[in-house]
Length: 349
Ligand code: SF4
Image (tube, rainbow, N blue to C red; front, side, top):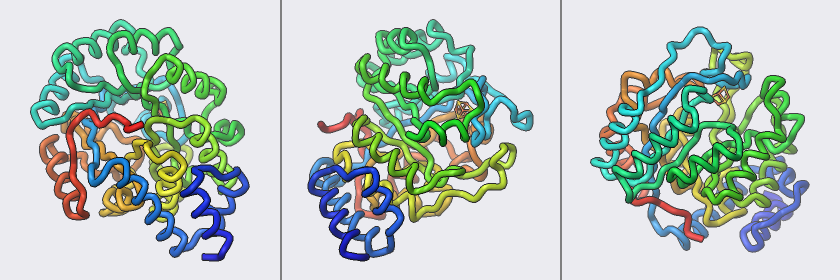
């Protein structure tokens, strides 16, 4: 590590801010020593806020039907090679009941942009979920909707919303998405969600096609300015039935490096060690926690549909029952000296 890189890391740890050029420099000049220093600083700030706690969210993948055609996504509209499914409201609620019995106090309802989930349908599910489990936080991850829709869902009881920004560079966004999807609308959604009062999560893939240190530096600047409550980052992993099927995956090393940087940019942020990280390396999620992450998201979806929610190839944990997923992650966290906690896991501001 050169002196300049060390100086950037120490300044970031102190001031939680660098310029776009400095972020690009920090990424381009990285080496093992720089990664070690970054993760040491990141873990120290996270420990000061959250101790040894790792939060857990129960993920319910409610539909793999999507009207969109994002070029990197295995469940994109154009992929005719997957079996489509949509859970019924009762199936969704019973996944949550099962999760509640296992100790989960926060649920993430995630799906493609499936038009069956009108405001009325989704509000009904959210309010029933909150009625059955008033002690739980409900997170939605259902894509782009109108401001009015977000407001209705919030009024029905949704607490949090995850919408990855994907990239903070408009030209890069256009290379990852078909015409008809726009960077401006994605940003509009994120701003609406924040203004309405949701706890908001953004995020991006590491190593997505056409991404360079410059795009990543813009992502980091965006995170600095937007100050999300959550930030989901994971390596890009190609899906064979997409236009990016022959691209190489993002790396574990760069994902971990960025997790540490994001922790230092916004110390209280809720930062998941994602399933994608666990997919590119058997200990990816443990390594994510050791780089500064503090959330894991075990799968509560019915086992029968899990393989169909294939955003990318070789996704792990598609055959395990919910209880197995939870216990597996608990053991994994214990093995590295952390404690899986099952409360709502709100951000500590
Ligand atoms: S990334 Fe999301 S919006 Fe895009 S095709 Fe996949 S599920 Fe649909």
